[in-house]
Amino acid sequence: MEKYDENGVITQAYYEQQLRRLQTEMIKLQSWVTDQNMRVIVLFEGRDAAGKTEMIGRITQGLKPRVARSVALGKPSDREKEQWYFQRYTKHFPAKGEMVFFNRSWYNRAGVEWVMDFCTEEEYRHFLNECPEFERMLVREGFRLIKYWLSVSAEEQESRFQRWMADPRTRWRLTPIDREARKRWVQYSKAKDAMMAHTNIDEAPWYVIDADVQEHAQLNCMAHLLNLIPYKDLTPPLEELPPRGAEESGYVRPPMSEQSFVPKVYGGGATTSRRDLLTQGQATDR
Picture 1: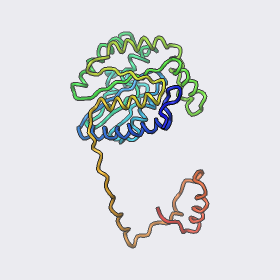
Picture 2: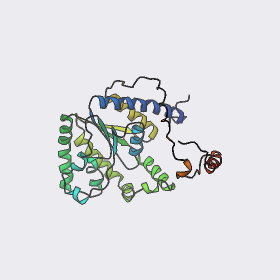
Picture 3: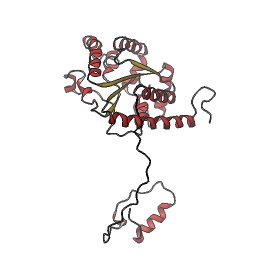
Picture 4: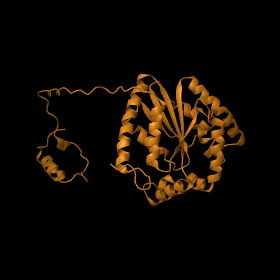
């Protein structure tokens, strides 16, 4: 199997093979987190179009929604604006045995809010001073806090914006904030550098991921995350399922013709024969 093309980009076949392997390991990590009553918080930050949504989607694809959750908060409400800044985030924190992946987090204040003038100078400075202590408190309380910054070049970001605009399915993703961000690349760079300088603490350091090739970024992040949290394989042993129980005698289920089936726009030639069976009242119950 070819692993990389002539440009050093991973081939689709090798990517899918490695993604399946790492997702299998993520399931093992999930079981370990639950077994050990761990509380894991993973933050994903980065510029618009850096690939945060896709990254979290790949990581959580095979995980239990009740154990591993993705959180992507929208614009704060008027009431939330009057709360302690971190309050709207803490209510989404994991209980014991859970993992939460934040698609953007409290670092909005050090990024988009600061660059776009959505907060005051005083609020911004207060955040930079308060955030390290907030995160140290979380670690002391037993949370495992992991912070990733997805780094994307100006050229790659612009390429992704153009692809979003060209496809009606993704055009909605290019928000007014994204449009304005295109004009403020340097301001965002300054904000990111200041944020790193103040919040790259020993208890919760920043890990930067080269995200220009999304497939590389996804695999590298998953491999790194799995190495950060030592875990044991708690996969249940393979076993042969016993025979299904016999159906209760005397019970007759309603005919399928009384059920409202979704029309088979897709599905091949089975549609016609299925419809004929329903018309004749001869279809087997499901």
